[in-house]
Image 1 (cartoon, rainbow over the protein chains, first blue to last red):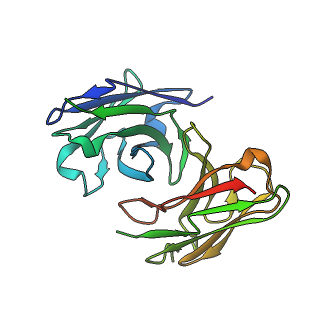
Image 2: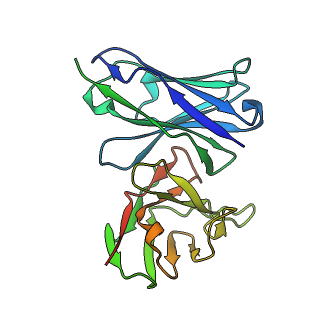
Length: 115
Length: 113
């Protein structure tokens, strides 16, 4: 079955770059689109952006200048980099699969931005 | 950006009773090419990640109980739980995937009365 697992540091210092990886199993990342979504503590959901294995990406303009999403087909992984983080970037970060709607989600990983 | 607004923010419903959640989009999410509404509903139980309930406004995802139904078109949508069960306690989100950036409603918390 399709499984997604996010991983990465749980604590990032302000102004540094947040880096997360989503390891996908049960399906090749070449067959779908893959998104990152975040959820600030006690808040709603914010779509960050997506990637297709060809390298095609689309980012939320609210984060556009700070976001990079990439794909590693050899490892079947999707990665997220968010630069110049502040406390406002503290959130649970999810990766998810989609053709159109988001049909499989990872369990999420909490990233706290603090010195 | 398309703004998604849900109502109410929370509701308490007795077991076995109907729960109704509304979602309004600031622009139509109905495609003219295939007459589909690009609107999904997700359920997020406490401590869990969101899971897909409904897509294209009214199509239940595989494995979702038939007490969950979606309706609406254009800019106004509804998620109905026909007979609330204890396991339905969750926050429910609508989301449009009609245009980038994809956007979610603020969520509706459903509790047992």
